[in-house]
View 1: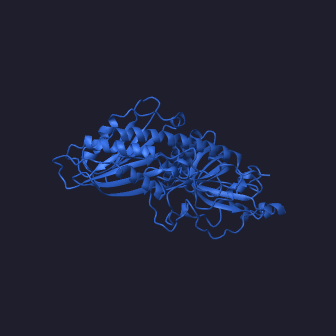
View 2: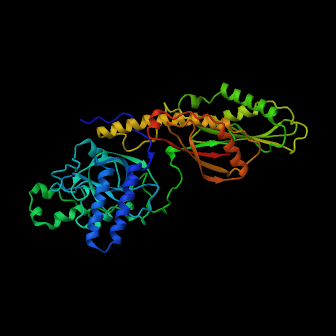
View 3: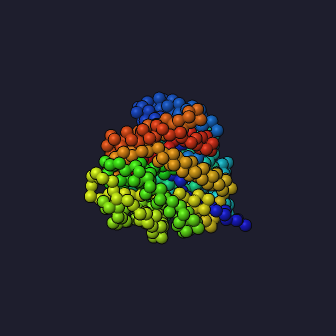
Length: 486
């Protein structure tokens, strides 16, 4: 009897292609281009041999370790055995000219010496039953040795083997990941083929067609019309937008105005705002929202309170706006923290008729209480390796969140605004951490705003003593995309 995995609900991570997968895809595309450009069959033969030699060095153990792609085929034989294909794809390079595939055989006869078909009643079978064609997945599996291509390849024609190879794989685990939306203009990713390539040999070979009734029952069933997958990876009707922005896993957004933002900085505001800010923060600390402390909203969030102050120090108006799924009572608590303070008149020479101040109150996520949204895995027992991998992902995710909170605090405390910047200002910087360097290597990826905003951000970041990443993240040479907004 299968026992559902407790706590199997995990947030879907962003699809990120590992380095070895990127090298694999680039090599397959490069050798295909050479093969296609050559008019000489003898030279084409040598190019295929060169590809075999390269793959033997790149994947000596023939293992696909946590590669990502799109589940483009998921079917069953007449006896219910599952066969599948995953189109290997880099989410950052959907325009790649060649998309190799990893998949199982699609009938029992060809699978006799491989055991790639997934049998009904197994945990992996029940787990696969929750997937849909068109979803982005992360997978691990073992390919098989082959004299011609190093990895066993199922195509019967050389052109298919070089252009759209299908490498026979015994899958160990799969999990959903969040990837960019797909479009019908990407037929290799958006839909499966009507009949899998590795079926043709069985249909045309009379000796193989004369197998037992059991073998005949394992022929592929006619494919049903492909339905758009529900959830992540669906959306085939939408325009394809290749997401060049950093993924959610390695992106951290921080605010240049960490505590408050003023309508004008052209006055001696330090003492005036220091007292107000300290009293508001003290009130907030002494009267925290009970809904947050009770764990009803473990995802946390932010509340922005804008107050308008007259020349005589009267607070004329206050407005609150929350981000995240926070109740109105949290906004009310932030409003009270701001407007219960008695303010002195604005100093002589204040340049405007009124002062507008926006305070930011942030509630960090309670990672030890946070339960992500439901997925189809909640009531399904999973393959043991999938269980182990998801548990590891949970630990990795928690470590990353805690580290990001540390980075957020040190980054926002290092900024010292001296002027007001446009609300649409934005900087994205790449921070590459390593065990050898005390400070990360920094590179500017995107800039929107004035040079003064860029200068202020860079000056603040230069003063930071960065907390080192956890050992779990250091093992993967973490790259962080730091997004700075007002």
